[in-house]
Length: 238
Image (tube, rainbow, N blue to C red):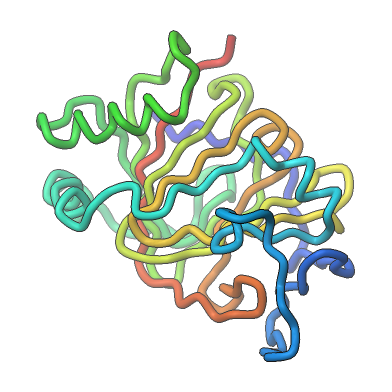
């Protein structure tokens, strides 16, 4: 089955971020100032969430979530053992069929070994409402170090209200930008072995992207991007 992402809106060139009200803007060459205390959400969110303004942060609160260290190093290795043989047979592609991704290879997987199946069961249990119809195959996206995901909204024809993804091998920064006002943005720090969840408002009204290595900053701090594998679960539209 082909990747279910459809690009609804692309931004020409680099997204221009407006002035920051609540937190400092993330730019290509951010100043690292020791006299500024960034406020990145409430307690428990500071390590992974920042936004262009307090109202934007309030809009996405409850609709975005990052669970750090959701899986162990051993569980990450178990996933890689299952995934690497198939991925190594594929070449990295730099021309995606809908221009959403640059420098990637991908697959979809329905059958898993017992350990990984249990792990994915945990993902589904925390990410999706009980009884929610789920998209059966799990999407696996392997980004080269030079790869990145452009701003897009996953197709509402194939995907429901929630997207949940495990981040393997590398930290990265996911940027959400409001479709109706590109000055409104949210950055999520996706640490290695974390689980991110996008729901409802963040899912439908914001594009999301994975920043390329050269642009990978979170609240002014450099976040080196290496090869990254994401293991993504989605529910079905209702």
